[in-house]
Length: 242
Image 1 (cartoon, helix red, strand yellow):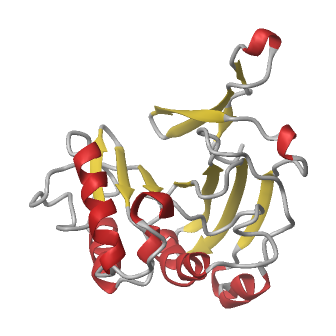
Image 2 (image 1 turned 90 degrees about the vertical axis):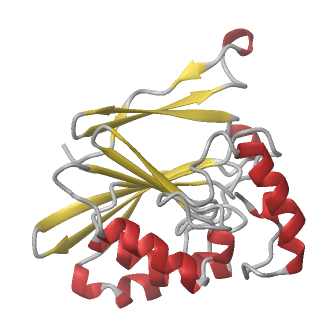
């Protein structure tokens, strides 16, 4: 859930979260694992599921500093059989890197928490892709890093074009501290797709991600441009180095 779904409170026990969180659970109860399932953190909108060779985990980045949630996410990712699950995908609302009004030259607290705690965990467990929202636009980052098993790639996709007022590019994300803190992993970030500087140049959209063995392909489908306002599709993007 996002900050508009469960409030911008940053702690799990904040009173203002109780009613919105109940509404969220009522709305998605048939779509996520039930409370009490080993694939659900009890009382939290944090869960996982697997399909074929792909493992998907979603967590609440509004409360990125919550230790109970972090330890659950950590145990889920570290306990995976990587021979079985070659594609590990994470969803959260706020993004570790973005260039809209929530990111750019400034950093919100959730961004700091994601960079400091979750990104090292994602590297250690070889997460393939992180999908976020929060910024009402589309952008695509790629992080390359090195560990004992070689050089790896993690795609970080921001997709917030579902219907709320569209945002515009405000400037590049401040990466200096993050890159310095992760020099040992030889972290390098590329901003592959940047949003437009005018809101009108950033379309409402949705994503289609296809899994084909160890390959992940992504398409962006815009819904407010094109002849006669017909949806249009981007070229397929392979989430791997060629």
